[in-house]
Image (cartoon, rainbow, N blue to C red; front, side, top):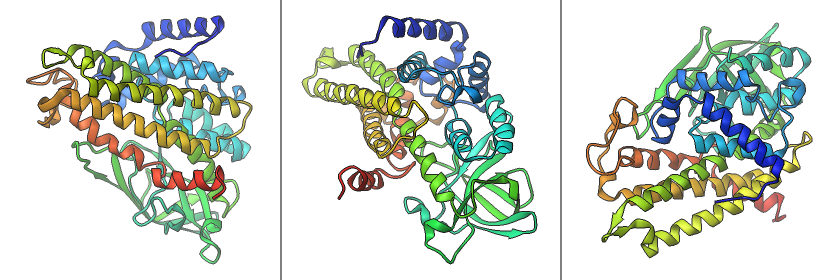
Length: 398
């Protein structure tokens, strides 16, 4: 699937490819392409490689360590990294908190936290969802009460991705119960390595423990860790979510997934012919490729519209919906291509030490686990049903 770019943009693509060839560890790329689990070291290593090159925070303003790339350059970089097998960067500090601090943080917060995000000194997690406050996030119950020069925080967060690794959490807390729910929320930064913070893993269907419950009991948060104004956190939360939803679209990863699917469909046989010649399968492949090309164009338009410091609007909800549906369809087609070989679930197959499936095509080992795990895409970051409501109100005026 090809988009047309200028000679200058193609030269940039060649530069990115050369960098990836020389600096992306082959064993890391192999794990990503095989759909195997990445370790904390894997993720921190790739973060450090890109930071050393100066290409880590490419979506930040240059004054804070960004690259000054055009929207098309950002798109090309994402595309090439995904095709080469570059891991998805941990987004919480880099792509969520960073933009919030740049826009709403004070100078002390920017000078302290932003360099630490780039250097990997802090591993951030997101304290948004709670039991009973997922898609209806404004109904959150975690409280923060002022006590001298700090807040006392009590409550529970859930579905905290990679919270087991985090030493810091950006967190939504209720600081005023007497006003409309959205008006009494604040955005604070919490040190996870202190008394009163308990992290409990949640084991997912594929056997992983990437999500967690976080219990907060009389946790102290210094007042200087309040971002922006007290009770204005809902504004900052919505700003952050537009970045999260745009990232969830995962255009580059879908492009890489499509290329992988094409290779599989050429190799796997059905009724004595390559699967790609099966009319029903080929039709579904063509449909998802057309939708992906359309989404890639829309993604470029959205990136371009915020290139001068703006923020994605309801368009981020459009990208989130379409992006998650496309990625799920690609994983569904891979699983379908594996046929009965995808039925057995062998947890060890998700690790690099277990090279291949015991029987059938090599992709069979992780096909089912990936398919079931990524059903979550249409739920987290605001469910697709909620995104449709946002589109109907903000774009269609319904």
